[in-house]
Structure formats: C-alpha cells, structure tokens
Image 1 (cartoon, rainbow, N blue to C red):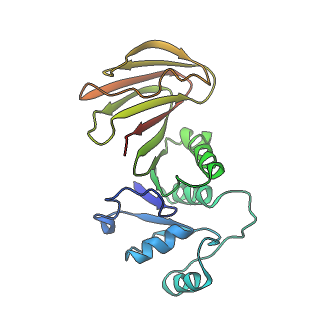
Image 2: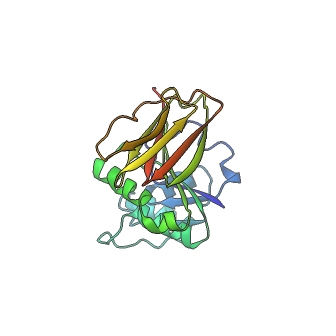
Length: 212
C-alpha cells in the first residue's frame, strides 16, 4: 500500500497533483497547507507547523484535525511522518518536497532511508523531486527500467564494502568492490529495456537523475 508524503513546495515534479485525489497523501508540516490548497485532504498530518503563519495554522485547524508536536523534539517532522505511515500499514512511501533547502535537512532525510528497521520490514522509501529519484537498495537482485525521464543513474555505497554487479548499463560491472568514498558508479546510464543490479554485500543508494 502506497502513500505520498508532502513536506513542502520546493522542487516538486510538474505533474505531482495530476490525479492527486486518487492517491493517499500525508501532510508533513507546511506540506499540509499545500495539500489543502489543492483540495486534497491528507490521511494524517505531522509537524510542529513552524513553517506556516499563525493565520495559516488557524485555517488548517478549521479544516483538519491537526495536533502540532513540540518544536523541541528528538526526530524531524519527516521522520515522525514516515513512522506514522509505517504504523498505518503503508509499505511504499514516496517523499516529495524534501530537497532543495538546508543540507542538514537533506542529510537527515537520507538517514531515514538508511534506518535498519525499515529495511528489515521491507519498507520502500523513495525521495522524488523535479530532477531526481532516490531510494535504498538492500543486498539482493534488483531491476531497473530504461526511462525517458531519467537519463542518469548512480549507485552510492553507504555501509561497509559493497560488491556490485551491473548488467544492461552503459558501464557494466562484474562483482566490483566499492568502498565508502568511491565515485566509480556516478553517472551511469541504463541501455537495455530492463537492466539488472546485484548488490551482493552491503547497501547502495540508487539515484536516478536528469539535467534540467
């Protein structure tokens, strides 16, 4: 079961609200206001709502049953939102509006993707903006389709030593060992209709991207 989480309005794909009424949404802080501005009622809301004005907060309270959390807390609004989605049974969580701002927030978002409990539960977490799509690949065999939207794909090792095999790419690899800090697998391209990725050890961040 899939849900989209909206954090803000930065770098959103142009077609994000096409057929939006047919999709489950969760509002993360200011993302809640943006959803209501598009006549979308989220399944739940999370945040301290410090990124909206008092007037906007009051308008949200009139429309939705929001319960702002304290600004001083142990997790980010997005982390709380992802956990809420998992608790509600969603196993595919797409995150929008989480890039293009502060780099510490971006790095915090990546930490959520790497959370072991979500890997153990086979929760699919994907971060999407107008230029990129990011997700974690665990050990195992994965496939990726050639896309007219995303020309490039990169693989970033995130823990220990990764053994990576790529087939159907512009630059194929056979049991290549990748250490953290390696840039060998930046800016590859899918050449076959369906390409194959074998992560034999460790985990990688798969980043699909395009030029604007």
